[in-house]
Length: 300
Image (cartoon, rainbow, N blue to C red):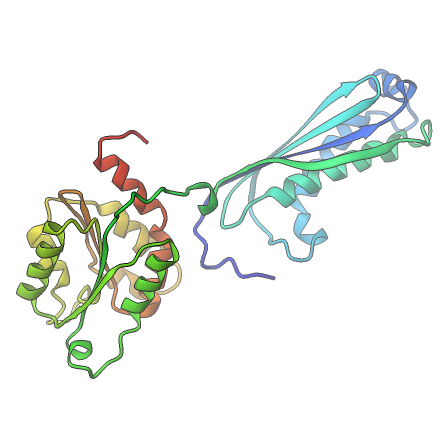
């Protein structure tokens, strides 16, 4: 089974359709409830709902999940029944398999209940119609010439006593979406950090990700340097990062990281630890990029 622990929870939906063909006699008797097993569509609806909830028992690599809603509808034609299954969940992974299994089992239930009077039925198709939710549904376009920068603030790293892992992780993340960031290491010096942030903002860098200097230590001053030059705070960004991290370690609440806007630049203070960086990046990307069209005055 693939781990979904790094994924963020979001509202996810899926719709699937199955089609079963039958003789007109079978369809007519089903609609008149003139069958040995009675109530075909009612039983098929219940079977589909139950199947959606038990998909993880049937398909080995599907995850158990707290399904919020399942709906099974039928479109009856003279020679076929179309089953439409919709599933909704607020969770870390999608529900397309749950929708497909729901539609399939509802079709099989109809087959089972009609088979005494129609030996030639056929389930002719089962397909996914739509799915929404998750990061794949929230892709953001990066403007041409979009400049980014990574700032590592650490006395030890600046002195060559410690190898930088966190800044490199940020750099790799940005490169994975087609960006080539400026990369620099500075000691924990508030004036130097402030000056560098100002320089990058003036040079048109649109996204600055810092790592380090967000804790409670006497030399942790990155947040103060950021606050000194910001025009507006964007609190939700770091709220999302800390909330995500807190589900994994109780220490996430100790990060003082700030997200701030200066002009058309976002400055985001990530923790110094590599785990903290990975968790925060997972929490805020790609949604944070939606801030840029907002800065340009465009709508959601």
